[in-house]
Image 1 (cartoon, rainbow, N blue to C red):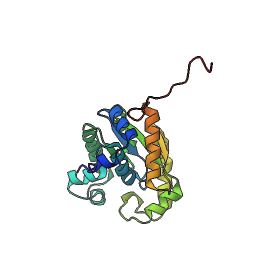
Image 2 (cartoon, helix red, strand yellow):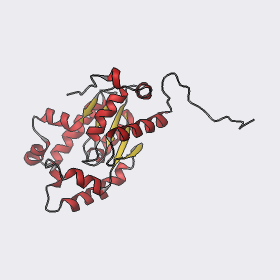
Image 3 (cartoon, rainbow, N blue to C red):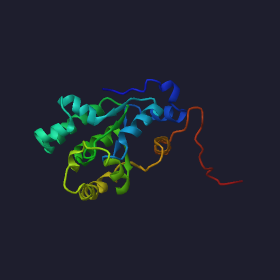
Image 4 (cartoon, one colour):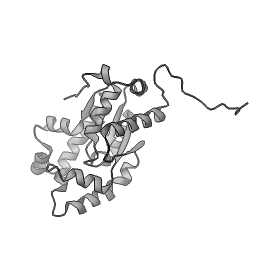
Length: 211
């Protein structure tokens, strides 16, 4: 269930601790396409912030007692989306946490409203070539089980990217070490929340200019 960072004392950074304090009960919610790295980066981010990492898809499977491909095959996408919305609503009441959502979750207006109210949303924006390289290694993506996965992915990106762009923060997901993306997210959160590492006073421009 909850993947709490067991060694958070060793890996939590001063900036991460400050961010966690500023979040209060809110969650950091990662949104974006399948293959954008929400789960792998989310785990590292949870460690740096010293708060639990939760994968919404894992929680959905636990609640349903079956895998997501099996849910799609047995009940269809509409059934899955309804359950997804219920699970995410429940999880958002359990912050603070780093919450990785499925690629279609942010398309639900009610889910977006709950995320705005109870979290800080971050879009992991990945380009088509990056996603295809990553997704070719996986065979568990129901929406890509088509005759032309590339065309399907392009269609999903055209539909979803304008909605993802409504997230509060955007970080480019690309083929660099996960630590690099995690550091960029921490930097973005630091600026967004207006925090500085504990013991450091944020600098402010002098109103009167140089003397």
